[in-house]
Length: 292
Image (cartoon, rainbow, N blue to C red; front, top):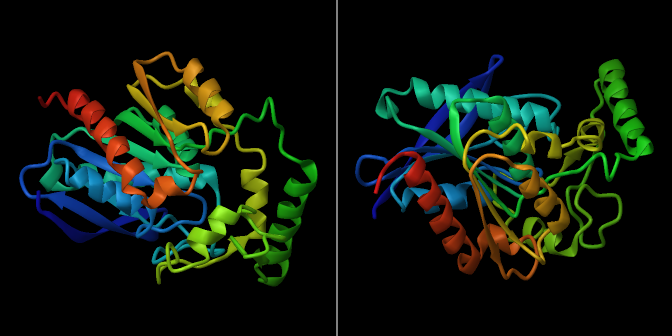
């Protein structure tokens, strides 16, 4: 199937969010909004899965969240889970306002941290009619409460910015890890090398993000999901126990696909994982869109 890409703009609270819309060759089956991992941009995992779903007949949007990539917003590189959920809601509004998609069902896919962000967005937004989480990270604050010292570090960074204008940042990844947002060797091998470090990506993380991320809970959204849910995960991906707990708490129609990954990051760019994950998501979305 031929896939074309066109720019797509979302507006949230006056900020312009820049996206890429992947379009199939024919009339789209439905419309997918995607979101990706921590600090990521639209040309990385979110775009990979958007393109894969366009090849399967869906219009699919990948976009830079507020403060990231080409999108507006300050402070730059602020990782705010609830803010990203609000971005998703704004993207759904923009897609529904586009006459090309009049009457089309909107569905959603989130990758890694984006799986958790998307879970909150879907639980709060009845316009999204199905959800697939691919190697999703679903924090369980009840079992693993946020470190108060980390939250306090984020609070101090925010107050310093408001008082002085200085934005404190640390690297998202580094070869020797250290004080970084993602202290995983495989994360550096993706974001810190040409494998994943696309020109639009900035290797940075606003320290005040910790005030938002350290206590962010996704498990509470599981029982609030009312739409079909697909869990795609691996025993070698991040925190499979959280994925299982989340899945068990979902009361809406659900299905799961466990794949054999090397780790977490190969879900971003390995066709041996992307293709079966996209096949399963497309099957769910076609059913929701009532397309054979």
